[in-house]
Image (cartoon, rainbow, N blue to C red; front, side, top):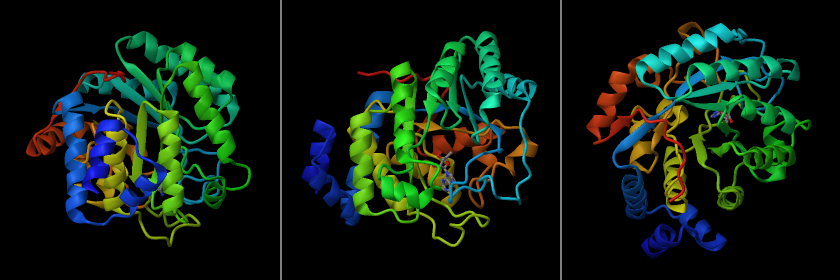
Length: 346
Ligand code: 5AD
């Protein structure tokens, strides 16, 4: 197995059968060898620096009904909110003051009537913060709207594919959504010139080793600049409320695999990981992650942006908790980087 890990380290890819062996292997020595290699690769590329991104959850309104997500349209127990353009700009100002140079605007999928308003918000942020990166995570739009966002000054777009397999996609989403359209959106984003992120939830209901293998091969071929990987966590008000959470161990293994596949990739240690384990964020970094995304949303919204139960929003997950985050990183030998941290192919 260590030979396979060395191969992945040096050649950045394995055969499907080799990936499968690696996914199935449960030997703890091998796993720690994998994490160590991934960590070394991240350190060679980025030093002991971890990029920070300020996450602004601009709305929890959503037209979709994904079976796993707490802010799905049909959940009547959520108090819905939408930040005004001024609210969003104020979040950016506060973030800038704290040292953030990337703003990630994430939200549920709004009706298309809001696209022009969003474009204006992007334009305002771009003119007030010319030295910052603007990342969007606003779901599926038309190619024209993505182009409009890009021209207004957005640089990066996160759109997890959730699962590459069409049957599995149908197990996670209502029939009006399709993996085909999701993949089409990702292709458009890349073509337009966005630094593009995709990813999956680890342990989503119905996920198999074969499906994970498909995800790995898809990511290898898409070659995204960013990869978001976190464990599935149930939300009580969703059809998947009774399913178990995804495995932390498997999440960490995938983080390391993706780091070895692409040494340059921007790989966050996600809030979902920090939610499942007190030291989840640190474990993610020690497995090769190099990005954290503290929450810059106004305090009174955070509880309502409830994608899953128990979502961590306090302490080191909050932008105001930057000092705490710095201390936690220092304890494992890392420091925050306040660089914009664009993707660089080397
Ligand atoms: N558990 C973990 N992650 C979730 N997401 C949505 N719902 C959950 C959940 N229950 C993730 C999805 C989405 C991202 C914004 O949040 O992968 O793409």
